[in-house]
Image (cartoon, rainbow, N blue to C red; front, side, top):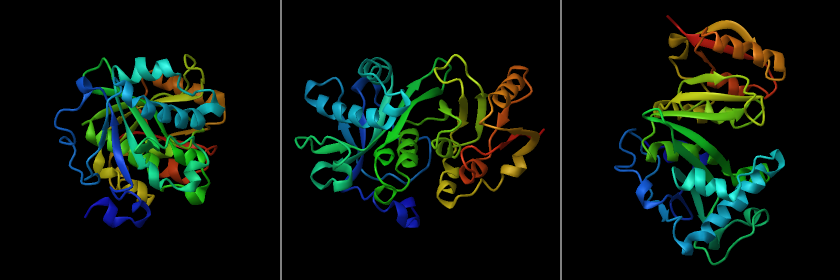
Length: 289
């Protein structure tokens, strides 16, 4: 049984008015897409767009308008040249697009709609290949949900956007960055065992950034919708006794020093992350010997 049949909350993904899109230059397209991970969540033919064609710049404009509004208040909106130099040329850009003619009024209120486009992007996920073989870096995840009222949001849009990209591009190991107070942390921890690479990152514009590595595990993904943890989490992981306070820089630094002293690797429990307030303390875990 597919995800769409199990969870009525995501019935919006019908393949008619909303479909996945790929904004990837031909040389970067995935060979044998979706062949590494057994998953039947996305049976729809994606909308293909070529970022190197002048005729497709309107789609790029819409992506950037949405992304800028989603991140503008944080000061981390993506410059246009970064989108081209750091995402389009080396990487993989994907998301979901809504048929423009049937865009809900709530969406139209928050984005400048280009009526000439058949499809309007409503989410974005960017991944870039890393120097380490087989490893990729998540560069950007955003969606229109950040701009609209709760009752108008598409449940799971951000989570499914990242899931589609990881599945389609056959990603097995993913690194990424997020902030401890970001709601996105609740999504990121559900894609596979979530290892903390940095707890405090002063080289970043926001030192309270954590860097993570996930071993992509699609068999865990449905648990995001059940608000639970993998059944075998306690089999493989144990508490370290360290409680992280994400609101205290001293606590972040303390965990960072443990990482640098090679006392880890350390992990988070996805259920705890999703069920807690963003400013609440977190238990830190390690793999059992």
